[in-house]
Length: 298
Image (cartoon, rainbow, N blue to C red; front, side, top):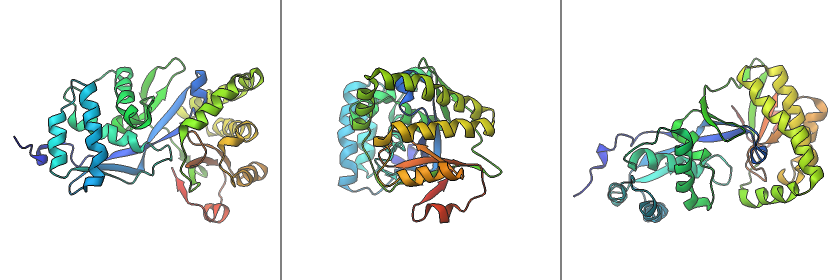
């Protein structure tokens, strides 16, 4: 029986990318993490895909069939046979959830019974995304699927939140594009090796963790004065102790922001490339200061 693609109700659904605002690395130490959907990038199902565009999806379909009883593999295989593919402009290697978005799309479209418990849903997504990364937290697909802010509590508690205000007057969060993709695994491995040193572990626990948890708390109530204070602490800490995670060539622009007090930068995700997350409370000329790099205001 041929599956009629037009009957897929989610065919035109847009699945956004995601940004991990806070919690990079510290979530490993039991800290809070805050991730939000980012509609600047995303993807959706389209028709007319090439065999090359579909090949990975066909392999993934076989992988999912072996692991999930609620996955309708016949429906997906039929759709792929008719030329369906996932059209995405999410840059890969940027930590924006390029694989998370397609996980959300497949789950939304081809899974029969939807899980309502967020912790269990996160676990489902972790196994789905494991096809791409080997190991996944499931957070990226969860954000892309629910299209809401997600707060991960220190004990792994998952809750959806109303999206916080990220701009107010001259106060502005922004992304600085390094123009370089990166791989998360080696950076996380490096961080874990550093944690084996008692002095570094104490620094994380006594300085970075409190600032990370506090900035999330203050952002939720739009206390931008405290947000900026915490952002400054995180920025200075990462420049001092996360030098390997900061892309080459960006140490000077990072340091310049701290010296002028015009803006502050921090890692956005694992670092090593992708985007840097910035915050400014002043009326600055973004294009002039950050030329020739691309800036995206959030």
